[in-house]
Image (cartoon, rainbow, N blue to C red; front, side, top):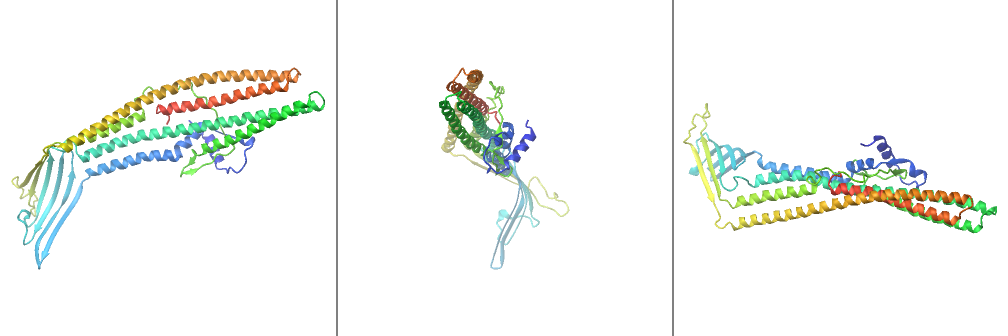
Amino acid sequence: MLRRNSLFIFLALLAWNMSAQDSDESLDSVALPVDSFMVLVERHHPLATQARLIREAARAARLKASGNFDPKLFSEMDNKRFDGKNYYQLQNSGLEIPGWLGFKAKAGYELNEGLFLNGQNTVPASGLWYADISWTLGRGLFIDERRAMLKQARLLEESAEFEIDLALNQLFEDALNAYWDWYASYQEVMIYQEALRLAQFRFNAVKRAAIVGDEPFIDTLEAAIQVQDRKVSLQKSRADFIHKRNILATYLWLEGQIPLEISGRAYPVYQMAASDLILPEDWFSSHPALAVYDLKIERLDVERRLQIEQIKPEITLNYKFLNQPAPNDFFANYSVDNYNWGLKASFPLFVRKGRGEVLKQKVKIQESQLSRDLKAQEIRNKVAALENELSLNAAQLTEIRAMVNNYRRLLRAENTKFRNGESSLFLVNSRELKYIDSRLKEIATESKLNQVQAKLAAAAGVLN
């Protein structure tokens, strides 16, 4: 977990204007740990917010699909008057309730009157209550468009969670790469600042020795060149540091989509990466990219089942219970002999359209399955390669640190010999350049090790 104090201090620094120039003091004022940085990225980065909107879009799609099963009130009226005569007036109102497994229920009240009323529309003067039940026995019995849309919407909502994981994995990987690039550039500035300080100190010492005749004046020229070279290197490293800091700032936002700027007083903190990142045992089976493919295949299979349903005969059975209302007893006139029923059946002879759609969906499923298998192999290979790279970088860092320690010992020994008059300025500079070069390699390898660890976690789908 994060230390809140460091996060709050850093947020205060972010509010400062960056008009102040960088200085040695401004580079070591307050730490920005990688955990604090990632909290800001996760909470407020626009891409993280956008990723979470995928969930809302999926919920909206499911809500829309569920609306196909909402009960519906209806009312119909049709009236014709001509030449002062009421030809007919038809009224029909009620409630329609969609159901599952091909069922649909409807209850209503019908009142019709007029001089030229169609015989089949004739009802008692008090009107006619009815309860209508229809059942699809063929096409649409096991699945229809409404149920297919709802099933696909549910799968899409489940898939949205994995798509969010994928988007956040990529965002976090990019953010961590930017952080460790910033770390490396900051450490380079620190190295060259110290190198310039040592070169300046050595130049002053050689200059004093030359004045009193202990050293030749030509050595002051070599020492001065070293000072100039270190100044140039420091300027280049500072320019690179500012560039990497600005890249890092693109990942920092406050709530309300307010972009932040990183103060020159903020600096990164090194965090040793594990030489062998232990992935969860189920990382592959629960990988979000593969889960997205699996759910896509399920959605295609729902569509395939729907298309199979279309090649079945269309058979709909309808039965309507009829009842004439009475003033004191609603069911006084009810009789099982009062009803209306019907049967509707149709079937295309060759069903070529339906069979073509089914074949089309099968091809889509096969394509998606092949893509999924290819993606699975790519993930396995990438994770295996990154695990190997992580182990090699960790071993390399161990060797480089040992080399840095040896170069440091050589430099100290050479400086001792130089102070005793047993060495030359050229040898001291040569030892120091080797030491600086090894320190730069150490910093680059530290940064690379953390970046590889982030890539490995992202590739395995467990970074977010």
